[in-house]
Structures are given as structure tokens and as C-alpha cells.
Length: 186
Image 1 (cartoon, rainbow, N blue to C red):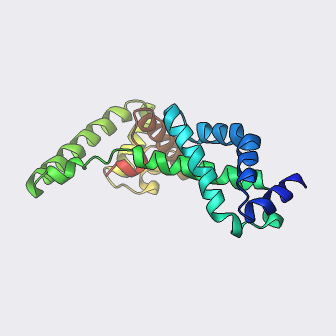
Image 2: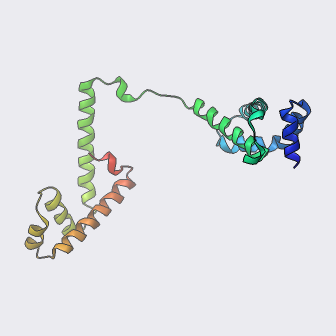
């Protein structure tokens, strides 16, 4: 109820109401900005953003409807958004390395990346059990059918499929441990 009276006074442009608002919620606003700033904002930035949050509320107070939320929540949202906006401005925009490469350089770089990925996959295959590795190589590199592999290796087709699935899981986990996702592999 007290916030509603304070809001009505703010809407009537009562500057004392603004002072009361700052006294009541100043610490809250600072803590919201500090939390949203994730340790990237200086003390000066935090104080400046708090002042901006109160100023924004003051300038938009006519649009605040008490039924839609409390004054504290509205102020917290403004403070959080101000902090996030400031953080976005702090992040430097660095040009992509590809921006400096000629088309021939880019093709050479892509070829090197493909070779590195191929070598990494070959090394990763060593983590598979020998039987699973053989199934994996026959299926994915020699393009043999599951039925053919199962006949040659005297296994059920379902066993071949499950070994392929386990092999993919081992490869996926091993590659992820090395910082390569499925999308990175060509």
C-alpha cells in the first residue's frame, strides 16, 4: 500500500517521493546491478547505472500500472536491463580472422582444419574396442552394409548396430573432451 502512495506521488512529479524511493530501494537497485554485472562493472559504473535506473523510472512513471507489478520489481527490471546493456557495450568487437584472409588462404585453412579433424578422428578411433573399431571402419569408411558386416564377422545384425551406436557414443564423448562438437566435424 505504501508503494502505491509513493507511485501516485511520483506520478504527480513529487521530487520528495523520488528521494524516498532512492532511500527505500537504493541498496536493492545496487545489488541487482552488481548481480547482473557479473563482476564486470566498476563501482563507478554500478553507481552510475543505479542513478540511470532511478532516472528512467522517473521519466516513465506515468506508464507504470500498480496492477502489473510492484514498484520494487519494476525498478529491479530497469536496473537489470541497464546493467546488461552496459555489459554489451563493454564487450570489444574483434574482427574475425577470416576477414583478413584471402579466398585462397581460406581454402588452405579449411583444408588444414579438415586434415586436423581427420587425424583427431583417427586417433579417437583407437579408444574403441578392436571389434567395434573394425565394425565402425567397415560401415563408415568402406561403406559395407550391416548385413554384410554381420555375415563376415559372424554376428547378429542387431549386435553390429549396437556396436556402431556404442562406437558413436565413445567417439562423441572423446571428441567433446577435446573441445570438438558434432557440428565442428566436417
